[in-house]
Length: 353
Image (cartoon, rainbow, N blue to C red; front, side, top):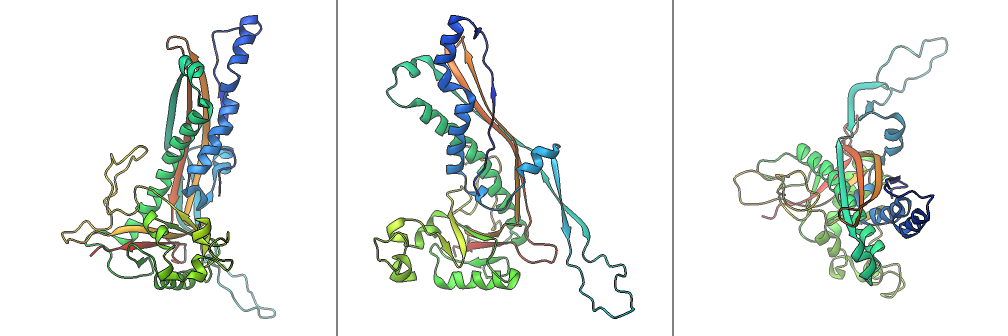
């Protein structure tokens, strides 16, 4: 799902009385830099560059309405179905369908900002549309920070349920072993696990690494009728013509170039917006190195919330520049399974043996 409107605007302009002639001219000159205009442009860039906000359940509305730094997510069991007998008590005390007492908390504890300086000389001398360039970069930066946190939340949960040590070397209800390229057999295994866990693919999405996503265009693995579509290679309903997978087995397919994909581990300093190291699935002494090629995820597996986002602008006379910044306060939590133990995240792992 795309973010509906996370960026509120908050304008900081000082030093000029807008009622004066000079102030009116300043307002006219600064019109293209007011936060309301920046907010919309940054929002568009944000939505284009986030992957994980298309997954899970968005609780931003609750976070904004109730305040505080935590959202409690109760685990509710499945009630017991009982026969009805005439003149006999049916509603005896039964807590099977109530709160199990095991809650999950979504903690809103991530707060990051992205500032950019726009010098007067650049505004005057540049032939480029600097507004679009700067807004795009601000949106990209904050999107990558949010996306990184949501992705790490899922990856960390997968690591906790799959374990580490000598890595993952066989299929289970928590993972499907794949190579660099996906095949119909891999998808059949994934479908079998999902059918056994939830009965259908409703609410599921598939997130794939660049290598796994690109492998879906391999006609030798999947056949021309699927990769080229019924209308031939020029049809919009195909991978080779359109460049987009669309869906597999009824599940939307999303490509992610996250640093956690196609690698066995991630260092804390791997790149901008990466704040947490990941040791991977294989921390043992053997020589194989389990790579993450993707995962299937249900909407009930990931909960996230952006509680507050702002765009601020001020003119800094000392530096003869506009300072434009955007910040976001957010959090996320993942559940590997529901209260009945049904899996909600299934990893696509590559043992690299």
